[in-house]
Amino acid sequence: MRKFLGPYELSEEEERVLRDALSLLARRSSTSPWQPIETAPKDGTLFLAYMGEGNMEIARYRLESNEWWIDAYAPPHIEKNWMEAWMPLPEPPK
Image (tube, rainbow, N blue to C red; front, side):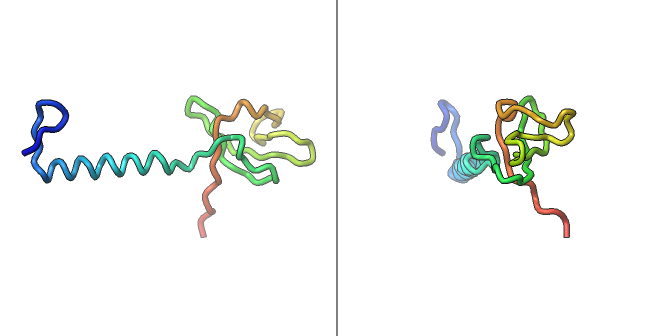
């Protein structure tokens, strides 16, 4: 038994499981698919935009008008600062 987190004692197996879980959690948090909005594509590619407060929309940059667009909005033009992050859309089903 080893002391861990103050007065609590863990067996070697419990300590190994806890360290593995913490390691997995650290890897997952550093591999988030969300990217800074400044890196969003500006070639017309559709992407998933995180709008904050749990809201997500499919967005794109329109080269013709040099504007960010969400087609579901009317008017579809949006400001870049409305988006917080982006990620590529998944591949469609085959």
